[in-house]
Image 1: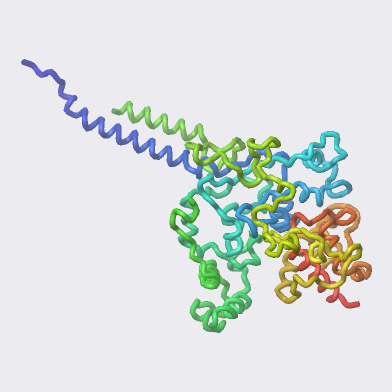
Image 2: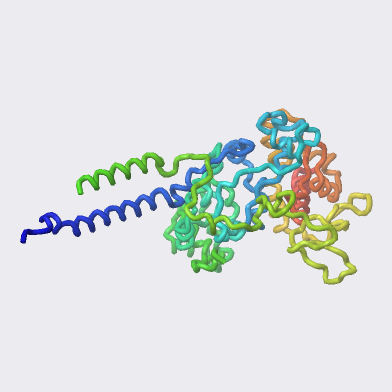
Length: 256
Length: 207
């Protein structure tokens, strides 16, 4: 009786295992590459009903974020401004009142406009957490987390795009190393702020007045001498202590 | 086996190059693998809701009801007073800046004018007012540098200096001339803080 199976069959199971392994690796790799927020969300720059230019308003004119996003300090939700807010500057007789780009605004606000509807402008939401994750803007901006940490340098974007991935890993990175992200409250909406810009004397004076230690003691402990500039780690460490910031890391803090 | 790897490599390269690099700009709504729990059918902040006839998720309070988030007055005879949200309700001086038909002078008893209050006023002034009125209140805000619109009131002008606190509050609340109303953007307490800061700015420029 001859051999039923040819010799190469002996290697078949090993080859199959290798191929299936390679296939699984490639599928996992591709999923990681194209099906995570780093790919699916970063770069999302939808067309808005009015091509509102943040780099002009927040960058060039240096308007504060809170002129329009009025209740970010009071509310979990950072509000899209009411049409009235645009109307404050772009109403009849004011800045660029006749610009064709502002037609949707006139339809919402100008009762003399022939296409007046009075309906809100339908801005397209760019940054949108899943409905099972509850993010609270007020809790963050009132404890030294700047807009820029999650939204990027909006003051340089003529068309706003999704700059950070806002995945769960992104949240946890910050919750675990919060001192790398805190800044003084008066700089929350200054998207260009760097710890190095902070005035050393003023900063330590502020910390010292609330911590019970002297400025000299604090500076010596940090190894900051005359003429040195602050680093994010030092600023963050002091602010974290000052405000007693302990970001929660249990599931129920965000998935409630 | 050689063929398998060749096909796999070609497929991978094709998929990755067809979908483009990470971070590229795109305008279509982001792809979601399992959207069923990501996008739940519930009323959300500033989102439309097809549950309601006018498709607006944000509802106005029904007439005669007290919305959630507002404080119920303990003494019912006192009527609805100040609220958590602190927007104008009621007709007292604190909420209107007026006594009957006249603008009031001085600050209402609900606010305490101290350093903290003035700092709050400065912060709110710089957020909401400097764009037009300028950081010092002289009416030369950034808007006047770029666009020829009718001049903004100089808050340091003797005419404005003479205005009573209540009238400044009323103007912030309802706007005046080209200025829009800020009653929806600044709460009552902060409006008084701005009034206090403007008064301080005026005092700092002398007579």
